[in-house]
Length: 161
Image (tube, rainbow, N blue to C red; front, side, top):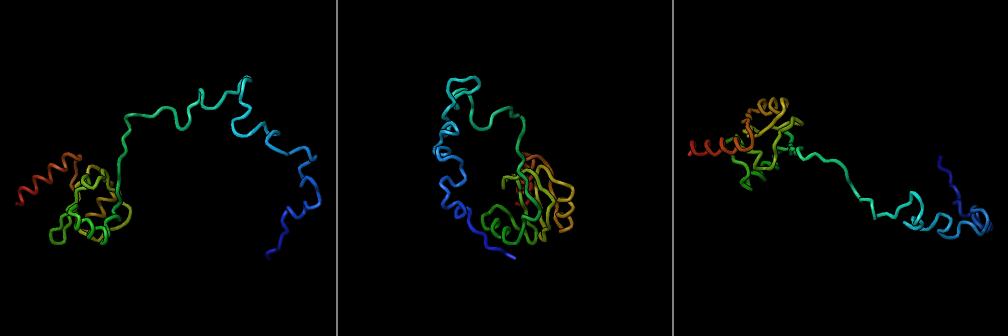
């Protein structure tokens, strides 16, 4: 059961200091040494902020690490496929959708979710689950680096024309 609780401030009415000790205490910021960076003057171990300290992140960062943009199988829904075909990012041949994930800005295909479309995906990296799900839907995955995939698709388009 919820009880109505009186505010603490009403408890302190008629008490001069509202639980702050003597009336000279707890007046301004003097009891804490000032506000902000005040009081960081000439004393041992007390340096002014911003003079010798860097703000924000600092430390070692590896230059060799590259970020791999990934996409899940469940991204390919009916709405998304219609949008991609309308924007000429995906080719549709009958029931087969031909997608180059490098053109969409992705390097890896992950296996979360399901898709009901027959997809022919060209991608640099993919997981075993992703491959299994694409094949079970009737599609296939063309493997290779981003450059290799683009070359393979260009050659395939030439042979079809």
